[in-house]
Structures are given as structure tokens and as C-alpha cells.
Image: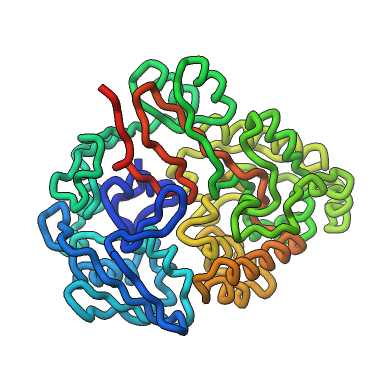
Length: 462
């Protein structure tokens, strides 16, 4: 279940729930393309410091309230005041209503990247009457295609919102989301007809196809990585972090653990993404046991050291932790594996009460540059150790100023080329392939490249 239906309290895995009940100023399709959402048009000033929106007319919240510029302003100002979205609005100077359906945002510095940010949770509209409601976390009031009708442990029910501005596009009358903590149970639920579809692991594709299920798969901006707490003495040493980079056999993990669906990488983004650097295209040179041992010796750990690897309860994460445990043993590092429940994991990552964590990381959300802010600069929510990328602040500013991907890409690529030499605080392992299985008759599901879900396109045959 989501951490909260209040966007200000949301966690990385919550968008699949939030996308059912909320909409953002800008719509980002599952393919990652930006288009009209609650705003039909937008325009930046020449210096990329002022962004003007024309809002969609005729939109109503689930409580019947009208969506307009005042409502849009209320949500943005509330998100800027407190919660998990505060950092995304640090660059925002002021919000102005310049007409019933016209909103103007003024930024402290060039902010071309904010188009992507406002296509995520930061651009969500919550009914002004619900913003201060103490139960918003369990009773969301948005403008989305569905309303929440039931919420219990491990299950959420939704019903089509008849007052939705684009109701004719909604192909199902409602849906139920059920959380299964392990992948075998998920696939069994689809095979038995308990559910119509579910995400699965790559190694389950053959079993799903043999059962007559249809497969939807494709690349996305999630990767498997080992997040390090650089406050831990050994992990504060760049040479130790670099040794960990070279100690991992990514090809063995992809072929033996992920059935070829997790492409080996030493950078967060897949090679097809504009933020990826061609210099790190080939991950093979970054598996070198001898070099890892040499780096450990240079760091003052010729006999290795002890560390902990935390993992979630999902089967694939536990298996990844165990494989890493065995691989690190080859270079002299003695790793023990801890299993955390979901909320324990979220809390550990946010509070820094961990040594290392096997993580599935969404690098592209809300904007690729956010990865630098979150993981490579002090104050980032997933940078508990306070790691600072050399020249990182300047590179972040360059990566955010323009809306042009070519201009932005140069700064992003320089950041990844720099961190690989500095001992990255999060060790990329492989770029995940999104895989889902559906029973016959279910169509319209799309690969969520950046973690955005479109439930309106789904159709279920009788």
C-alpha cells in the first residue's frame, strides 16, 4: 500500500497508487513523453526563469470543487511548505494567479528541468478543501479518473469517477490493487485468475508464457544498485567504494539471477537515455577481482572488512543480496544480510540507519537531474552519509537550466564520469527491464518507463 495518499508524504513506490486518483499540471505518459495534463499549454521566458501555464477548463475535483488557478496555487504552496516535496520546490520564488485559468511560476534561477518535476507528484492538484484535512493520507481528493473507495492492509479499491473531465477515455469501471510481498505468489495469483495482471520478474517470463499469459516488457529508468552509507568508516573511503564497484560480477547476476532482463551497468541510466554517458557504455571492464583487492589494500583493508547488506522481503531482492554477499567474499569482504520489511526499509534509507541497501532505484523521477541532488550532494534524502560529488553543485545547475535534453545531457554525463572515479556512493548493478504478465482479454497496459501509469487505457474483455 502507499505510504500515504497525501503527495507531501509519498515514497518512491507510491505513484502507481497516486496516478489513479490524481493528475499533474503536465502529463507524462508511461513512455515518458510530456503532454497536456491539467495544463493545456505552457511557456518559459527566454531566461527559463518564468513559466506560465494555461489551465484546462471544466475540471472538477472528486468533491465537486472547481479546478482553477487558485486551486493549483494552493497545492503548490502547500507542497513547498512541508513534506517530501519541499526540495523539489527549493528553486521556486513565487506563484501567481494571473487569470482564472492562468498560473505563473517564477524561479530563482533558470529551471528548464521543472517541466519534468511538475509532471510528477509536485504538479499534483489536491482539492483546496482537502489540503489541510488530517485524513488526506487515506482519503485522497484529486481530479483523477478514479476515486478511492476502499483501503485496507494490502488492498485498495477504486471506482471510475463519473465527473472526470475525460471520462469517455476510461475503459474500466473500477479496479482493485492487491499487494503481494513475493513474486511467486504474484504470478500464481494471475495464473489462477485471482488478479488480472501483475508485474513479475524476468526469470518468471517462461512460466507465465507457458500458462498462456501475455507479457508486456520494456526498458525503463529503474536500476538495481547497492546504496552505501558513507558515514560508515570503511565506506567513507573512496578506494573502498571503488573496490565494491569492481567486485561485482554483473554478467553473472544478469544471466544467473535475472534471466537476461537486467542489463549490466555502472551508471544509473540505460544507454538509450539522453542522460547516459557513452564513456561508460561497457560495464565489463568494471569487474576485476584483482583490482578490487588492490584498491582495498591501498585503502588500508588488505584483509577486507565486515559489513551488512540490507534487503527488502521480496524474493528477488533477497536473492540479489545473497549473490552480492558471495561475490564480495571473493575480495575479502565479509557481508551479512539483513531483511527489512517495507516500511523498515523506507525508514532506514531516510534516516541513515543502515550500512548498505540493495535497492531498486527509479533514476528518472521526477527528473533525471534529481538523481544527482538525491544521491550525490549533501542534504539529499538518500545521501545519509553526506557524500559530495566534486563539482556536483555546478553540474547540477547546468543540468537543470535548460529544457533541451542535448544541453542537459552534457552535464549529466560529466557527473557520471566524475563519480565513477570518486567511488560512487550508490553502486549500479544492472538496468532493470520492466516485465508484467496479464491474463487473456486484458489489453492496453503500457510499460511505465519513468514510473508513470495510465489506467485509462486498460481494457478488460468480458
